Image (cartoon, rainbow, N blue to C red; front, side, top):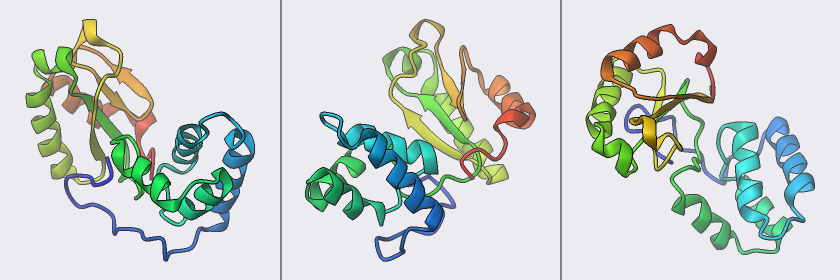
Length: 170
């Protein structure tokens, strides 16, 4: 999701040049994935995995490398909720909102998570549209860890006690 629900970081623009770290990560991803058939999505995933987001200044570089228009790259980045153009705050907390999870209370869990995250203001809440744990819904991902059969109480405990996910994406 491109815009966290509250206290989002300042919007980045294509006018902000890539940092040396971002340039290096982008070059590595393009070298690894740029020649793949249909390389745009693998490249975008690689950049976001490396940097936590896709800097807007990366879009024209990706477009040139893949012989696409900047509008095509921008369209894909803004179409998919997974891609973000600003760095996330703290941990990324994803709550599945697909049918199975919704039927087991994901919407109420999302509202609860939003309140909890707003209260401490240091994480990013995002919707996901299937985390692959339909039989154990509702599912949540904190950082890179999946959690099944989540309840508001379990989520509160997880957000307080999961030090392994602290600072991810920051």
